[in-house]
Length: 241
Length: 241
Image (cartoon, rainbow over all chains, first blue to last red; front, top):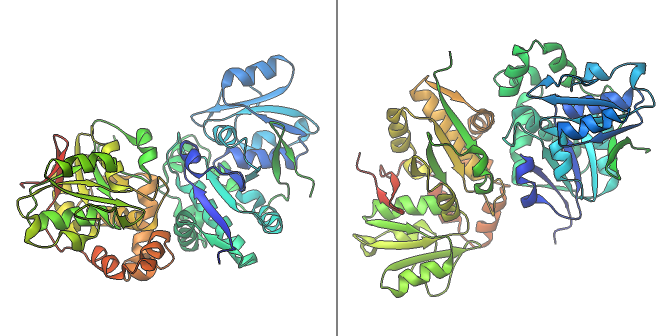
């Protein structure tokens, strides 16, 4: 008798059709930096984030008078209010606002999974609140790593491993798919110093070149907020638990 | 100046279009059991293996008088000469023969990558010969894990980690993509006892239920042959080094 709840990891939005089902809660992961920034925006009181796949769509929202963020290849697109640095979203200027957002990877993953049973946003910054909630839901879970341009990346995978580890600490009711088994081992290796573990990660190198070390530190620091963003009618809102 | 050769890992044939290029040698990996069995067949003197995607195609070859192997869901398809157990291919009955072969995962990966610069077959059974050859080629390398029905699986990933580790031992001329970085860590964890490491792997459980523990042991035992199967004109042949 197999009654345990499956936790699966999917390493690329491109691979999502292979893992898609109608039962699982999908956790969107884009540690450097989209999902970290989204959590930050809600922590500072943003009301709604509209994830859009294309820069043009974000621009349409901006032209209608909304705040809008756009990032491509780790850089803020010219003419927008924000990029995808969490620091862009800290402060009163986001309070009560609706923000349109497009990023290289994270918003693509949200778009891929938009018809799932529930779609929530995960980051180290909200990991404990997220895992507490996931355990209570008693549902199978799919950890959807945004990756980098549809490729596997190390920081999203590491976070998926961290979530797997935290869920298994909280409940013995989970059964791990092979991806989660692998990532849990990885996370256990990295736990003492995730930053050191990521030293050769391709996107970390990319951001370090852009002088974004402060962002990296922030994005790898757990539990800076208890907000859990959830997708409702095409927009992310802070979940009322 | 970036002159090092990239090693990338791709965790699913479905994801291959994201990693495809015209430069890399593609190593096809399906440890339990297709690529292990293919190496075994050549070790015992098979002349040619024709990988086909569908059971019907394998049947056509059989009806033309060729030997043919077919496996689906870990079980030999009725009416065929072989499944994908390496033990099926041990002995004089394969010597000098051409064999058509279709399997759930491995032959799908070969099909996906068939237009690559070079396509070779890897398994623990030929790992040292394979890595010696790869280093000499001085080319970027893509480790293509067959997975299980397009999902990530642990044993193929572990082998990709083993190849990464062996290549890095032999040469400092490689630069690892994020997937290889992760898998190398995994392999270093598992190195002392891969079988124990795989104890919860989904496909290992699947095979153990089918009483195929002997196959698993064989497939995880390194260096039982020096043959390197390579794809030429749509068929695998033993490489002449």
